[in-house]
Length: 392
Ligand SMILES: [Zn+2]
Image 1 (cartoon, protein in one colour):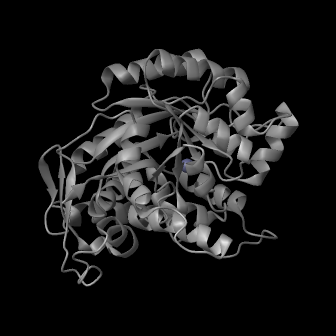
Image 2: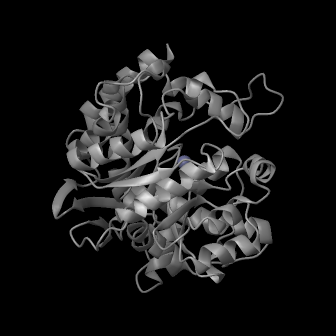
Image 3: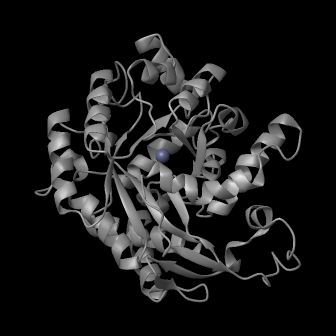
């Protein structure tokens, strides 16, 4: 029996493009940026019911992989073309409803997205994400907090997507309400270059100078950072959410987790693009990416990777300990047989197959029995219908 895993960073809707961007396009070189255009095109075709069906699929798969809490970094707000739904939180409610129906705990991180980038013309493919102004965003967030059947937090999409004054204002707002504050930080070199051009500072330096990192702050990725920036995050007692299965899929680079740990930063994990949903794989890949880079072994303590699966994720979401969230792992599964008496944390992180995960409990209620969800067939079939319409 082990504590339920906490997935601190997900974009559920991206589940629809799994396996559909793994080929060369006409672009000179496929990159994060060509992938992003493909992701936008899919995002722009989803109806509110599709958003529900896709989120149910992603969240059921998370439960099957031992995840009992998901933090949804939610930036799909408006109707296709950017027109507002009558309830501006309609899609957030759809996602929360999906989580409730499959039985996973959710924290909805309502995400602020303001612009295509510094001095960049508006990108019509981003029209479902963009807010009108900060006041309206805060007002809509207040409405969501009042009406949502789940805890809410704030996410700043990235330094690329927001004006500095908006980031500062929203960070102050999150702090005044004691909400968790998350942000994509330093995922791609182009983000650093753009930030240098606009602010003459690297992203973490800019955030630090404006008081944004704190103990309630989680930087998602933090890949392209300097030692000084790692020191800033450590001094602020911030958390980094690493998403290695997505980072390797997108060619982002390895998270410098050894440096971050040295500086006192906590590390948790996220499935991010949901190209794969396997938080154990995220934990082991954080270490494996560093081994490949440093041509060395056993760089991060296994127990830190293990703690990243639950404890550090709960911290990043400001969640109190939840004893009712746990899973059982079958020690006789072929991936674990013979592991008795060894280092349990290392066995689970480096060897456990998700098929060894048997029963899942959320808030004391059993939601997965013997590796199966009670609504599995119906959830998969609804998802397949969405995919058929989306890709025909
Ligand atoms: Zn992300």
